[in-house]
Length: 264
Ligand code: SF4
Ligand code: SF4
Image (tube, rainbow, N blue to C red):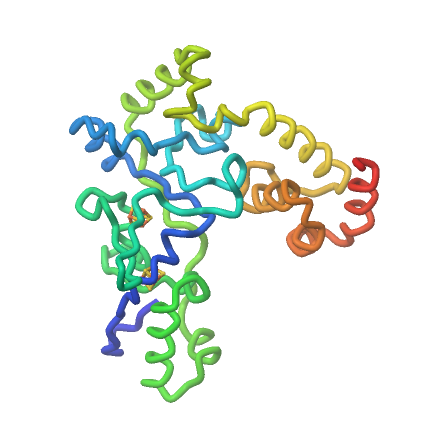
C-alpha cells in the first residue's frame, strides 16, 4: 500500500486493460439499485447473474451476485472478455461509456480504501495494470530500491475487497424474478445469456466435479481457483490445469492426461 510520505502521482494510461479481463465486473447494490430506479434498460440489458449464483445459488445463500456481462469464461467466449461499455477512441485511449454511473468496482480500481477510508494503490494489481507498475517503480526509485525490494517492504493486499452487503429486499426481488422467468424468457438469453449454454455449462460442471474428485482436489468448484480450473478444462489446456492444480496438490498431470485420453 502507498506509504503517505512518498509523493508519487498515479497516472492511468487509459489502455483499457482493466476493462478487458476475465474477471468479475461485480455490481454493487448501490449501482444496481440506481440503474433499476432510473429504469436504465440500456444498462440492465448487460447485467447477468454470476455463473456461481446460477449453478450453485446455495453458496451465496441464495442471494444473487450480479455482474456486467463481459463474456465470462464459464459461459461466454473465453477468448473475449470485454466490458460492453468500453469504447476505444480513435487515438487508442480507453473511455467508459457509462462513466457517471459505472459500478463502484470500476470507480475504485486500481485503488482500495483502508479501514479509515483512505485510498491506496492496489498491490495485487501490480501485474495487471501498467500504471500501477509505473507507480510502484517510481515509489521504489524514491526510496532508492529496486521494485522487488520495494514491494517486499510494503504491506500486501489480500484477496478481493469485501463486497457491499446486499439489501434483503432487492435480493428477494431479483431472486423472485429469476425464479419466475418463463422458459421463453430464459431462452431469449436477453437478461440471462448464461441459459443459452445451460446444458453445456451443466455438462462442464458435472465433468469438472468428477475431475476434481478424481484428483482429490480440495477446491470448491465455485471458488476462484475452481473456476480457473474449469476455464482451463473448457479449453482442455492441460498445462494450465497442471499449473493451477500444482498449487493445490501434486501431481495432477497423470490424472489429467488419462482423463482426456479417455474422453477422446
Ligand atoms: S487503470 Fe491501469 S489497466 Fe486500467 S486503463 Fe488505467 S492504466 Fe490501463
Ligand atoms: S463499466 Fe466502464 S470502467 Fe467498468 S469495466 Fe466497463 S468500460 Fe471499464
